[in-house]
Amino acid sequence: MKKIIFLVFSFWFLIYSFSAYSYTIRDAYEDYLYGDYHEAIKKAERLRENDEVLYFLGLIYMKVGEHSKVRAHLRKLLRRFPSSQFYEQGLMKLADTYFLERDFPKAKELYWDIVQKYPNMQHLPRVYLRLAQIACKEGDWGLKKMYLRMIKEKYPSCSEMKFVEILQDYGDFFTIQIGAFSKEANALTIKKELQVQYPVYIVEDRKGGIILYKVRVGKFKQRDQAKRVFLQLLEDGYPAIIYP
Image (tube, rainbow, N blue to C red; front, side, top):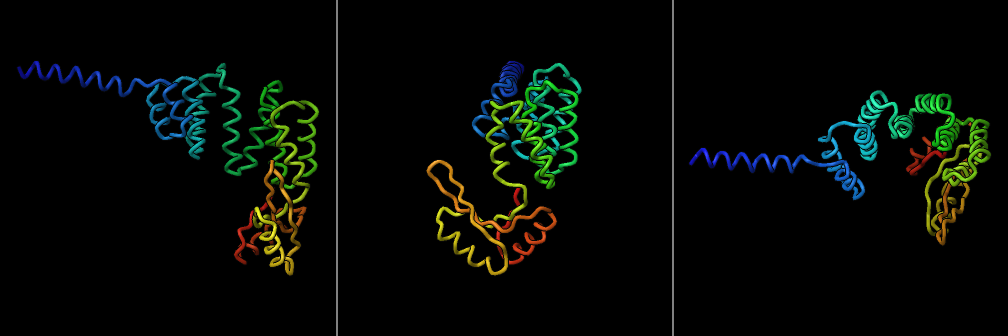
């Protein structure tokens, strides 16, 4: 009798174990789409590694900000599956991890490697956009204009065009944003507080039927100049952010 009970128990334990671990990549994608990233990771980590699983794990670890794990999975994808349909996206995501960590020299190196090795890559507009953004961060305004011009001339219908317009609207300078207000009166109050000591101005940002009044300080050609004022504003108690 004990033997029979043991066999029945073992049978149902195996059934339960199989059902608990027999996930597919679609199950993990479903959790991802619903924003349950940790559950998606748990399921994907139990799957047999192939190019799609490795890319998905890189993608989802990026969502939770674990860039070292993103790189580990994407480098494995690039090394083991050079013919994968996810190879190009994997290259882009790998470079993007350094961009998001503000390691601009490393990001720039990887983006340039993509440009040189894959001149027909479908993601090139995005690569050039990233390079333009890095040029902005470094204050290289001529390089920024060159990359934006390349996107407009070579890829006029690409989805990145809306970001090209945003970068152009920033202008060729660094500025410091103090706040964005839905009421102009609030922006004017902050401007009045600051204008005795700083060159302050207000930018109206219209999106649809909404207007935001953004209070900004200075137009600096060099990031070091902007950073000195930025640090002083922080010390004075203002929630300052350097743009771009």
